[in-house]
Length: 537
Image 1 (spheres, rainbow, N blue to C red):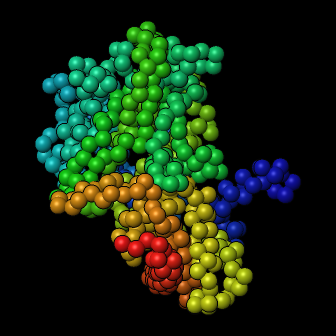
Image 2: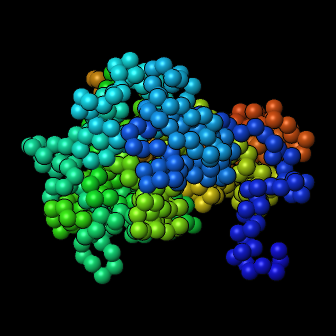
């Protein structure tokens, strides 16, 4: 191994870390056998969509769950279902195949943490198995109980049969062609001049002229919404800067006639009005013909929409403009003369799938996973040694600046290993159970929620105070609390002690947060005294 080229040696080392064969086990921590967090996934297709390796199969998409298992402490158990005949997929993450699927009778939806819907059947009154009102009710109940849902179709009415009547989902996307709308930007036809033709032209050309452009190695560029003063993308479109320096997923597979998400709207749950968010916009170049179609008029359209019902304990929703962002013909060129996306671009797009799976699943998933993440940071990253001159110094003697450094480094490590939005979201998840209101203040992705009788605040465009310092200092103190717990630091630690990790961590958070607030109060009082003589009321 030591004679290998450096890049090959590093790659092999990383693969060995994931596989952990028998001869390496003596050199890994004794807690390698801790049980994984389990996430149950249901994926449903209809019509000509399926799970095989054909053009309209989802076999490449399914590898996102294999990748998640190799990089997280999570066991994904995927059930594949079809409204008609199902084609089995041998992927080891798949535990069940269900043909002739019915949402109300085939399974108990509440057994799943996330549900994905890929619909192609339109509703013309002639489909043999349209979704029933009982099924719509079952899906609505699943979502209201906290289950996450993804839904997509394609142009025109494709996907309307399965997705077009689901609560909230039906209003987050156009499930039919609307060429006569007062706002003609809503046209989602197959051949009109305002169709959503995102095919990117090949090198040396200014327009896309072939249908097969969708299967080549040139993806479309999308516009990504930025959040907060740090200009982070939504967690769905965040990627490690080691993979993409911008930290942003700004490409998608292209297609000559995509569907379209609706403009931002809102839904009221338990007297709380929560808006949807458009997090990505796709662009149509002028003059695309993509195989004999009308030359397009240049325009743009919303292509990814999300709704976060977590504030009211309702499931999150993700809606995409087309399943052509997911099927094989666009990813690997299956059924075409093209080779599909390059491996680096495919890995970027697959991170989008992985982000969806992480973001929309039930919150219990993160509650389980976070104890592993916290302990992995503590045990393997040396973040305390990297941040303190005296690693055994008592927590009361450690400066707030050093505690802050530990917390900031933990976010940096997570951002590199996963992605920046995941890292920030994870820290906020930790803080939410300790101080929900404070976590909400820091949540840059949290939609503007309206409650009855509450007047909107006259906010400045950014926070007057850098609340990150409070967050990092609190998190840093949490790691010191773990360091000072003799049982957790012992080589004989068992899984029962793992269950204590978050409780111990929270005690440290309490120390760091209260110490920070006390210091902030002192500084603010000094500031107020300084201004008092000059700015009297």
